[in-house]
Length: 141
Length: 145
Image (cartoon, rainbow over all chains, first blue to last red; front, side, top):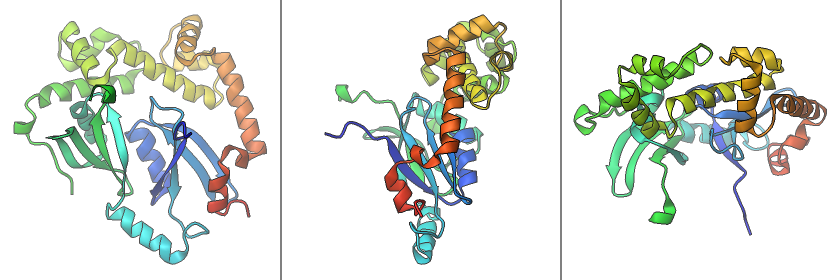
């Protein structure tokens, strides 16, 4: 029986820039920042109210995970916004939209009432897009 | 290309902007001696109207949010090896005892126990960094070579 999700990965173009985006703009906390060897870094962050979910900000660089051709394909896909990396919850979509825009976050969709509720969509500094939705009580649906 | 919300779809935009402004004011001034009156003045609201709107937007009263920010900043400072006394004053508390009490209430352990945990973790990370990374990532990324 699976009990929870502990780690997930977001592939980023530039790890240092992603660090700044996820901490200073989105307000996430750094959980791990561990140098590995001479040129790699294990960097995980978590949303403020979900400290036990580690989001691994992994840079797309040529190596075992991404041979040269694959790395270039991945970079193009991420930059072109082909990866929707998840749904983030907030208390109020309009307030969070205002706050994140003020901090320079780019929205590809401003808050809009859809048949499933109010939703906005923004991009991270690499090009990954996320949905922003209000906290739901799924038990009441 | 960025899409921006039009005012006609967003009749209460001015309210949201003022509430967000006050949240950002807390983010920037948490280390100062500020209270709800300062913050509601910043947003040009009456105190009670302001508290209600703030809580509606962020699920915390302005005071709860200020405490939350101070405790989160304190955790970051303690993780970077700052002393408890320095941390207390750097995040805007006026006495170490009230800081320690609130810290324990929010984090579940005292600042000194938190500091000890951080030091221990840092030593362990330095000694065996890969033990803090799930093995599947280590092998997929080639970090085991």
